[in-house]
Every structure is written in structure tokens, then in C-alpha cells.
Image (cartoon, rainbow, N blue to C red; front, side):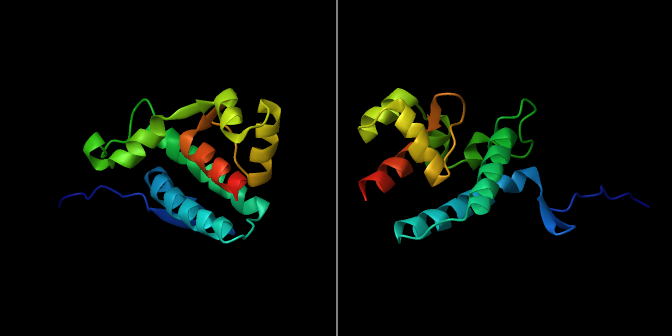
Length: 138
């Protein structure tokens, strides 16, 4: 008799919430982010709790993709070139302020209103910066 390895489920509903396998955080985050960007482009608003959930998914995805042990089954061949370039692109607050034509302090205020958080202190993901600039120009 052979013993089959036990697989962890990809998603589990737990007490009114949902747990996702770390490997799913990135594709789910990208799909939800695209939908939210579409809604915002149409003039819609996103509830704060939805924005927080999206931030949690992004954080989990980045943590999974940059873990020291690495995602075991993924290689750089699995990542499309656009996501590989955007994952490494980071803008300082001063550069984002120049693009928006405002002060660095005001950049942080605008981002907070839009539900965008910096990756680290004074460092913004390029795709977040681009989305903020696009919404500001509308």
C-alpha cells in the first residue's frame, strides 16, 4: 500500500472568513486589483474594508514571492515579464511628488484617501504610483 502525500487545500472557509494558500495570494490579488481599478476608473468608490483586504492580499503575495525559502514550484519562467518588471520597480516619495506636482506630505495624504500604502517608508510600488497619478489626472 502506498501512502499518498496529504495536500493542503487551496482555500478554506473558516468561521465567516476565508484562508487562501500563500501561492494563491498573488493571482487573486491581481484579479481583484484589476476589477477595483476598473470600478475606480468608472468613478466608483471602494469600501475601506475591501481596500484593506486587497492590501493584505498584496502583502501576502509579496511575502510569498520574496520568501527566503522561495516558492518551491515557481521559477522565473513562470512569471510573465510585465509582473517581473513591476515587482522590482520602486519609486521614492519625492519622485512621486514630482509626478503629481504636490509635496511629499500631500502624496501620503492622497494615497491614504485612495487606499494605497507604501511598500516601505518613502518607497512606493511603481504600479501604485501610476494608478495614483492616473486618478489624480482625472
